[in-house]
Length: 416
Ligand code: AMP
Ligand code: GLY
Image (cartoon, rainbow, N blue to C red; front, side, top):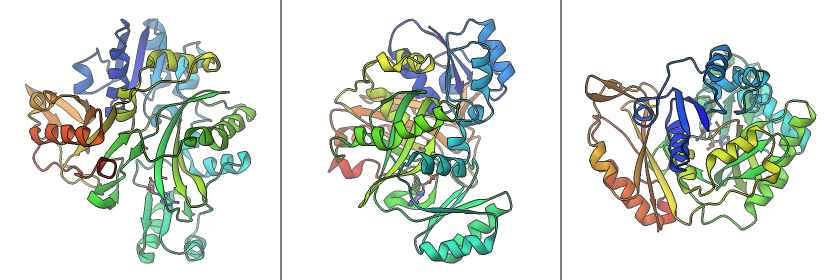
């Protein structure tokens, strides 16, 4: 297949690695990609959020399937433009992508579909938001309504900080005040063709910057898969109570969801609740889910894009486990220091079971340098979590990036 992958993060690198691992002779192009992706496949410098440019490239190059990695092109309507011109695309159109792009829209869909989620109040004024904070009580949960690159959510015991966060984001629009949901978090990815869904293996993401879930929320500092502590039947329960009702609601509104439905869930004492939906693969969860996938990824994505998931068997996964640890720049998430050399990748890759997905890297001269906050995802697979952790951290120890930070407790709780 001729496949175009849009995006430039570690998630897209992991998607491309999974497609290459099929050894099916796919011709893969990435746009715009990054320095690590460019070591594996040709990259093309086009704006992935420009639907006309992407569609023109796909038509000129006889692309069989476009895979949209990040949310920005989805929210910009790139998938709509491709579909209008008859190009198979994995990723929802602009309307269905509002499931991620607008927390208010997501809450409305969940209400109409009867999907279990926390109570929330949306408000455009501070007095109302403050009243909601006091109504739900501590810990306080305040969210910006639109896309905020992982920075829009504050969970805190500090009422003044909650009010300050609401005040800040109210300058840009509305905020959501939510009740706090207590429990383990699960990221479950479901492939959707608009009518039916197929689940991938569950993963857990570590959103906070520091060990012990301290520090600010980030885009994600590490992940592991599978989740050995999950009840049998969990995935089917989420399909029945969350994914299918959501997909059916969107289909009934003439905005079918074709792509990856990312269910961000919390398992509370009262059952599963949705904390967020995303309209794309998660980062860094993808880096631990796809290396374990046995079923060819291209066939799954193509079946979703072409409305034929119903006749596709459920994806299968190896019994090996996977752990990923994100190497982030000094100062991340607020003010990442960039432009610093990265060395030691060859030694890291020499560790058994280790691969590296690049995110914010570039080559200048003959040096690999950091160009953003989350720089690399170090991924290790192994028969068990203790070994996967040992491999991942051995590889991280071989990498040198001045001032870099990473968590040391990824997957610790399942390795003991
Ligand atoms: P979100 O961007 O909505 O996924 O929120 C980021 C993180 O904040 C989540 O992964 C949770 O760890 C936490 N969070 C968000 N909403 C809630 C909530 N209602 N209760 C508890 N934690 C939450
Ligand atoms: N890992 C969280 C996200 O992709 O949104």
